[in-house]
Image 1 (cartoon, rainbow, N blue to C red):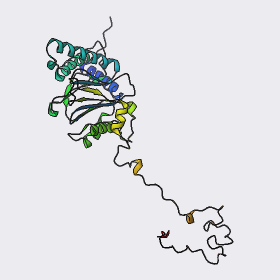
Image 2 (cartoon, rainbow, N blue to C red; image 1 turned 90 degrees about the vertical axis):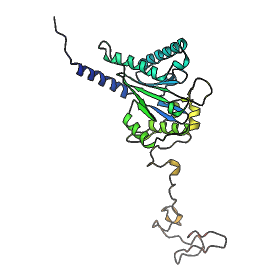
Image 3 (cartoon, rainbow, N blue to C red; image 1 turned 90 degrees about the horizontal axis):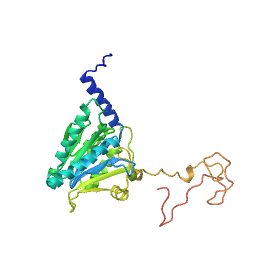
Image 4 (cartoon, one colour; image 1 turned 135 degrees about the horizontal axis):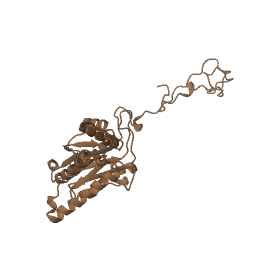
Length: 300
């Protein structure tokens, strides 16, 4: 009988954590930004059918990055849990904190179990309150850890680069359009260059406390994103916008060196037989005629 290969618990947990982190880092970033009237979610997602941002309950939304089949199972489980709790007790008993705790227990159990691989997912669970101070954002990692975020949060992809961009530009109390432009610019930011993500490749949704309906979740369509984002240029402040670039100065006719032009005085070709202005032989270099009253002097 052969002895099983032994691996220390520390090494086993480290290997599982590295495996999950690598899978999550391959996904595109998801950004959550608090603004004056709610919470905004934004992500680069070319698919119009497979959503990374979804509604869970009246005031609760869910965002994820990683393997789609894994976080979709978690989303469905969260919807069922919220519906059962709201039906059995009261809709006010369904909270973002309770849902985040349920997700943390599930992810922690899967990560600690040696019988299956850890989930390669990270989650955001957000709940919008009646006031900005009551908004809640929870970030859950692959191993079941829970952390509450304030202002903004990022997961997946180049997290450090996006967080650095948002840290230097985020301000409390932003309106919806300003928060949207900031989130989209952060998604397109990188250490080497910035890019403009087309509206068709963006997935954006909000929890809007100003909506009169009990359901506060709303998803943006590409045409609405185009109106709200407007004309977008480089996100980097050091790179000028194309409209701000100065057009190249036009050379004066006397400075154009064209050998085929018989009036060219700089090409070194045979001098003209007569002055094109006066019709007389060029005894001296031609002089520009004096300007007439009411005309602009081209030499000024």
